[in-house]
Image 1 (tube, rainbow, N blue to C red):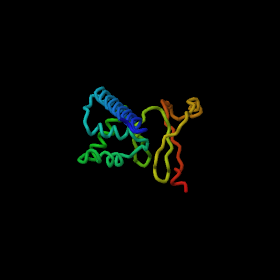
Image 2 (image 1 turned 90 degrees about the vertical axis):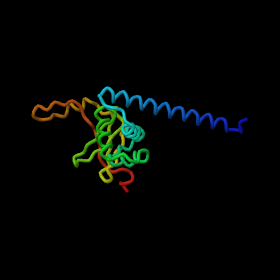
Image 3 (image 1 turned 30 degrees about the vertical axis):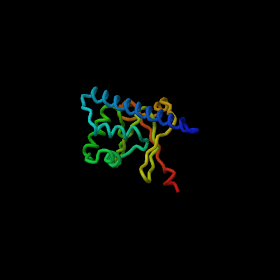
Image 4 (image 1 turned 60 degrees about the vertical axis):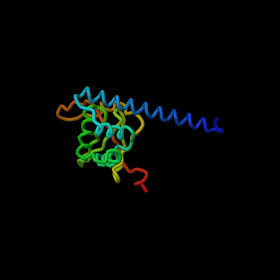
Length: 163
């Protein structure tokens, strides 16, 4: 017999657990298919790195991914995390955001979208909205450079650093 509200909470928890399991299973299936299509092996380390990227919108550095993944795989090395990230980028499951200072962040979102980067702390956030591709017509590179795409990043100071 259920106490008032208890059945609803239990049913709700079951739905959340089933949805989480379904998402994890579909994410793992996506990973397996992408790795296989690229001639790569599925490994628990790659899976852990992918799960972390897919679960965050913070655009972490390789070091940040390493720290997060070590919580579940204590003996993983930083080199393994770097290799896993590069493999995910190569398979089209992640995007590498590189900067002029040699630093890089990784994005688990691979759909077209834009970013804002904080000049103080380096945080990167997703930006809503679209850029009219016709605006590229006003950009005229020299020496016959042919534009094939673009990446928009606005820079400034995040809420925490603006104060």
